Length: 509
Ligand SMILES: Nc1ncnc2c1ncn2[C@@H]1O[C@H](COP(=O)(O)OP(=O)(O)OP(=O)(O)O)[C@@H](O)[C@H]1O
Ligand SMILES: [Mg+2]
Image (tube, rainbow, N blue to C red; front, side):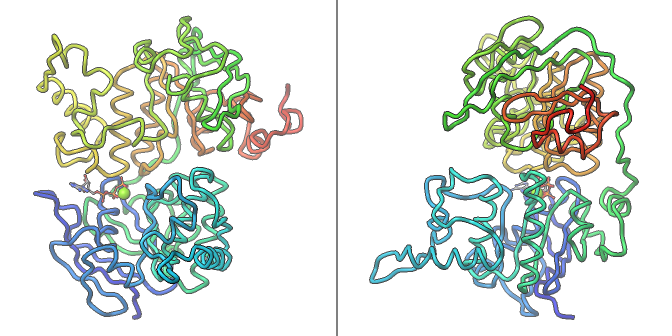
């Protein structure tokens, strides 16, 4: 059999912890090979070994049948292996081309030949249908475009095998469709792809084969045409997974969050939230549905104090909090699961244990007379880690060392446990495995059943439809419709999200 890549019995340890325990992964030329496993199973670690970021303790890697030692990413590049990381590594103020040639500059008489590089970038972009403008500045382009720049960067360096680590976790549904098309083009042009994703639907749609790992061990490799989402989920977690969300009808009480005529500008000074009205009552989950870029991020940032609002009113339990400091808003019984977990959720260089009290470390019992009580802090951390199944070597491990999904579970645990009157959850299940998603949905519903108000923002329409009691559709910075999830469908929501009026979309006004 012709394998382009073989990873044979790979073992990777971090101290006493075995992240990869004799895993074997074999990639055929021209296939899309999915790598599936729970949060913390060891997927990113295995790919970091292949890309030369980690050295394995044991095992062998072969490229086109030849044993190789991949001592660093440059060696990986030379062997035709490219990686698109989940967190992009681009320089914001540089252009697309400047980012792509960084470290691989074409020179002419000692000077960088940017024109030549631009032409090359344009050529590759056209060949693979990437539609990237070589002269655009990174800060001016969308997340989806930035990801394409990362793809271009690997192709520019001659990658034959592309590793995608959860590429769709950061994308909107429209961008996902486009990325899938790009992956298919890459395969047609003779590339091979390793795809990490938690979305079983995506595996079913694009992958040829799928290798499943569980708790650091290889479970098996299957042909996607011979499996289904239920079987894959069972292989992954070791038992059946329930995909539907069970909940009783909501029993909403008094108003908790009341937003009136809110106006917020975006980073470029353009109006992003444009006279938004919304009410979330105690005991209900309101889901915000909308296409990315319609003001949802600015809205959440404004009501949590992370961004200044121009005008309007935001009341929580009757108290005005517009433009208050984040800490003051938090103290008004608000918890926030932020969209960007690295920027607003965690201090990556702090132990995960200390991250569990980021918002209340200065209060008793975690602190007394200005002195931190680490015993209490770590006791609380240990409890949350157990309860939310945060898989970490210990509560003393740096947040940075946790897998992406486990960082997310830690933040959710911390925020839900504060038991706030209002829980704001922005893309809460991004990057989580199917089991963890089920658990988080249950906890959101539990908060609701305890009489709390929950505001959920998600690009996943499935999630919005199954978890929310009411769905508010945001379009161009306004709530344009509020619908009952039992009386709508994805198609109608899609129309509303695209700006059709409720009448056009068939909703009774
Ligand atoms: N640098 C490190 N130091 C210590 N432990 C680490 C390090 N990197 C990863 N780990 C541990 O190895 C395990 C596997 O992590 P990895 O990131 O490979 O998981 P993953 O399968 O990619 O999960 P996710 O789906 O959440 O991204 C985790 O328990 C993690 O805490
Ligand atoms: Mg990972």
